Structure formats: C-alpha cells, structure tokens
Length: 322
Length: 75
Image (cartoon, rainbow over all chains, first blue to last red; front, side, top):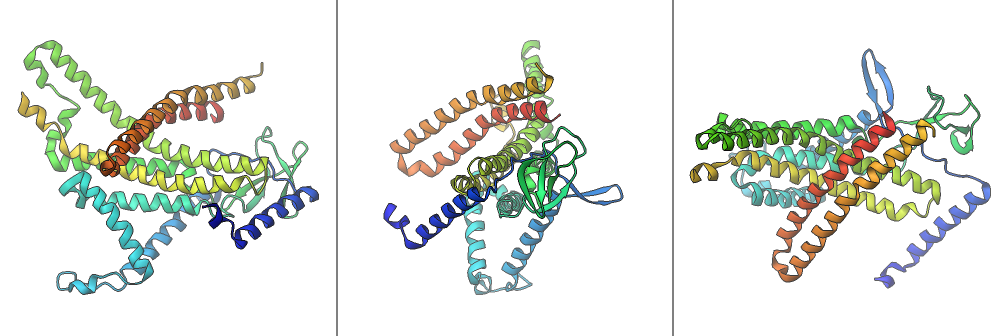
C-alpha cells in the first residue's frame, strides 16, 4: 500500500504543496478566517425575485444532469415498442457508466420496494443524482471562493483588507473592510434547496400512500377502531395516530437539516482548516467531504425509498389480527 | 457577561451535549453491525444497508441539536 503511494508523481505533488506552504508563509500571504454566512447571498435582483448564488449553482447542476441524460439516451430508438434488444445496449464510456449506476440502485430499490420500485425509482434516483452532483460541484476549487467584494451592512461582521483582487488576512478598521460574496455556492448549503427536496419526498410519500391504499391510508393518522375494545384502547390509538402525524412533519425537518447540516458543516470545516494550516491539512478533509457528499445523497435516496415503501404497506397485518 | 458571549457558549453547549447521545448510539450500531458481519459475512450487504439506516436515525437527534445551535448562533 505504502509502496504504491510512493511514486515519483506523488512525491513531486507533495513537495510542490510543501513549497507553496513555505513560500506563502515567507511572503506573509495568510488565508483569512472564514466569514460564515448562513443564508445564500443574493446576486441579481429581478423585481421581487432574487437570484442567489446557491440558486445559480443549482441551475448549473440541473443543466449538467440534463446534458448527461441527453448524451446517454441519444442513440436509443424513439419507439421503444418496436426496438430490438441490440438497439438498447448502451454505448460509450458515459452510457456504460450511467447504466452501471442506474442498474445497481434499481436492483437495490427493487429489493426494498418490490413491485412499487418502478413507481418510486424515477423520483428517488433523480434526487440522488441531483444531491451527489451538487455536492461534488460544490467541492470544485473556485466555488465559494471567487466572487465580488462587498461592504457588509452590519458592522459587527469581521472584515478584511483586499489588495487588488486578493483578500488578505489583515483585519480592517471600522467601516473600511470588505467581505467576499461568491458567485457560486454549494446548493445544499442553502436551506431552501434541502427543504424543497424534503417537501418533495414527504409529499410524494403521502401521494404513494393514497395510491396504494386509497383513503384507508389516512387511517393511520386518525384511527377510531380502538374504541371497540374500550375507551382506554381507543385513546391510546388516537394518541398513536397523533404521533404518526407529528413524525410525518418531523421528517421534513430531519430530511432537510440532515443534508444542510452535513454539507454546511463540511464547508465550514474546510474553510477553518484552510485558515489554520493552509494548503496541506485541507487535503484529507477534502477527500472526506467528497465521500460525505456521496453518502448524504445515498442516505436521502434510501430514506425516501423506505418511507415510500412504508406508506404503501399500511397496517394490513394488524387488521387481519383483530 | 455579554449577550454575544453567552450566545456562543449556549450554541456550543447545544451541539456539544446533543452530539454525545448520537455519538454513543452510532458507535454501538457500527460495532454491532461489524460483529454481525463477522459472524455472517454472506449477509454483509443487507447488514450494511440496515446499519446505515440505523445510523441515520440516530444521527437525526444530533441534527435537532444542530438546528438549535444554528438558531442560537444566527437568529
């Protein structure tokens, strides 16, 4: 393992990074402490509609996904009913790669959801690809670090002096410094993005529940059947229904804040580590953030799949038991 | 003490104390899953997905603590 890592190329890269570290330290080029903004910064105002930097990045990710989908399916015949099997074989590196991802996760969702997998898969797979790609786009150097300087509106924000186009770590005097407003920002560090995905997942769970069990789906929230066995049992069932209702709303919060918290914390972690020891110490954490970005997408995929499946199943076994 | 300093301590305590429980829980889940995989390596794929699911549910408690910490810090 160690022998494989000790190639000439890796040593050159390591030496270059250390040289960069030493030279920038000698020149006094320090990385400024991060300015952490919870909300995405507005870039363009179109009347009452504001385009934030996170929204801009989201659109770029959407375009990338659409282009990838078009390139993958370009060679497929228009009419699938008359197509031969040999026409549907994916071609090229992109086609094979996409088939590999889709097939693997489709097999997984079939093992969980059974015959409903065909209905669930388009939604959860889109969410998965969207989240993973937007997390990885957020890790590209330049996203979150290239932007325009602005004077902060509220004074207690720590501001720094800019020399030309580079922000330095020199603390600015009152009312003179600038903060950096980046052009692009990882989409999942904006709560609007994650909340939208969470709402889609939770609302679609209700839709699939109604499709599977008709109005019987809502019985799990408002269950009166327990009163047949006395008042105590009935009250317990009403309480259980209330808990189900609350947990449905708690899912929105945990869905959205799980993704937001993980990606936002990762972003802040990278910034703080770059401030503590520039260039070197960020590298392993950079790899970690790439992994976290994938895992969070997979977790969202799997939770949505499990909640959809639970919504379609209902309480049939209990009814037979009574 | 200043209100700003109290706020910083409060948000640090919120996430710091709130992460203890999920940390212990995730450790137990991961350890038990490793044990199960060692006993029955054929089932490791199934165990791994269930492990991630369990970790995610334990983690959501830490997420609630994070929400409180962020609210204290930024709102």
